Length: 259
Image (cartoon, one colour):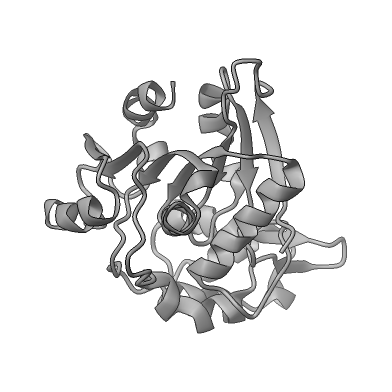
């Protein structure tokens, strides 16, 4: 699939520095990472990628990690990239891990943000139901949608994040997410492919939030078995959304590794 992306940072230099591909999490898009790209793009070309069924990328009824890793491989081929550094958060982290395990020669280094190569906790079905159940005929502005979602989604911050996916076509509002495909694919998205015998021997940094349950000490064996060079760092005062909850701490953990 030909993924949409926005670009920033410096062009690939004569020293052969690999570009950085940033892969967002579920319900997100590449543009959620613009602030991070401004910081990390001082020395690398940065591509902020929209996953299938998200952002401006095409929709598909198939949505699992081998397919999404294949999308990133195709993006690299189209861009003429022999290698790239990967940074993936949550769902994007699992996509990045899958690509690194399947095609290690394509990955210069790997940053995984607050997710483990195992089944993940959480139940996103209520959020999907709330979005799918929103009566878009009653929405004339984004604030209308926020009010309609308030009963089902009590966190204003979470509503604001979800509503970034509500776009106007001039006649009304629509979700740019493929809600039906995401709902059907939730079991695969919460899990992680077996990929027996696959390992990524290259540099790998796993960054977790101090308050998050997605990547804990119990996951260390799973990390080392698949990523023997893995380093695990904890960012204080942050949960699952490390890059927005503690941007300075996130960059302090990630920038030296990418440098």
